[in-house]
Image (cartoon, rainbow, N blue to C red; front, side, top):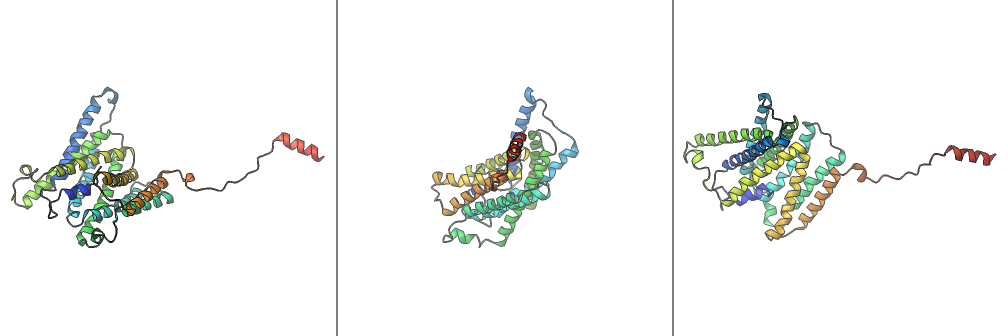
Length: 325
C-alpha cells in the first residue's frame, strides 16, 4: 500500500493544516474494516466447506480486544498530529524506529528468541530504509530533518512505540486461540469504531458544539485524496490482521519496508521521481537484511570442509593383515 504519511501530507491544505476533521478518518477506516470483516465472516459461516469456523463469544475473551482498539485509536491520531510538526521525509525516517521497537517487544512480550544474525538483519533493515529516505544534504529537505519542533520528534517516537505495541498485542490475541480471523477482526474493529465515536463526541463537548455534532460535519472538507487516506488506512489494517494471524510482526515489518521501497521505485515512473544514490544503497541493504533474517544460518557462513577418513571395511582389514604377514 501507499505509505500513509505521503497520502496524509497530500491531503493537507496549503498552510499545512487539515480542511477536514482528521479524527473522522480513523473512524471511517474502522467502519470500513468492520463492514469488510462482517461480510467475510457471513460468507465464511454460510459456506458449507467452512462451516466449522470457530467463534468464541465468551466475554472474557472478547474484552481483550478493547486494549488494542484503544492503542490503535491513539496511534492513528498521533500520526496526524505528528505530520503537523514535521515534513513527510522526517516522518518516514522516524517511522523506522518501529522496526527496532517491534523486534524488542517481539522478544520481551512474545518470548520469541532471535539469533544474533537476525538481530543484525533487523538493524540493517532500519539502516537501509533510513538510507533510502535521506536526500542529499545539499537540499533543503535534508536540513528540515533537524529543524522540526521538539514536539514533532516526541510524537514520532511515541507513534513508533504505539505501532509496535499494538502489533505485538494484536498478534498475541490472534494466535491465542483458533477463532476465525474475521470474527477476531469483527471484535477488534467494533471496539475501534466505538472508541473513535467516543473521541468525536468528546471533541464536540470540548468545542461546545461550535461546528455542530460530528455526524453532521463528518464529510466536511473531504476530497478524493482524503478518501484515499481512509481506504489506504483501512486496507492496510486488514492486510496487517492477516499477517498477525498467519505470520508474525517481523514479517509485517519486512513487508511494510519492502512495500515502501517498491512505492519509491514506482514513483520514478509514475511521478517522475528522481532516483538517488541513497535509494539504491537502501534497497541493496534491505535485500541483504531480508536474506540474513530468513535464510538458513548454514547458507550464510562458509564452514571449512573437513576430509574425514572413511572407516575401513572388514574385508579391507583382513586383506591388509595378510599383506603385512
